[in-house]
Image (cartoon, rainbow, N blue to C red; front, side):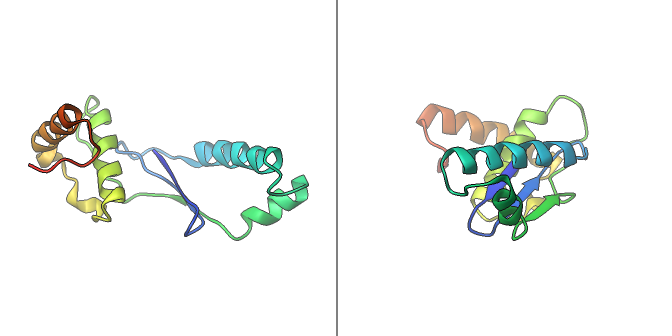
Length: 117
């Protein structure tokens, strides 16, 4: 999962299997650079390079880690929820996955991102 924070000027990569996200960060940076040019935020490719000099790019190791190969979607949602609610990522643990699945179902039923139990 890639998270772009324009306020803090960061792009972070999170992977619940511990993979390297360098190539994804580069691809997103290239795409966003093209969008900066297309929307005329900057005028030249040199200006795009200059724009990125203020940014930080993080290949995060603090992502919640899954212990199998089939809970990826739930861990994406757990990591997303932690980031959106400003909850430390270490709170999203594998032992909480059943409870979080129920939370996802509740959100879907209530048609909301954040549901209250």
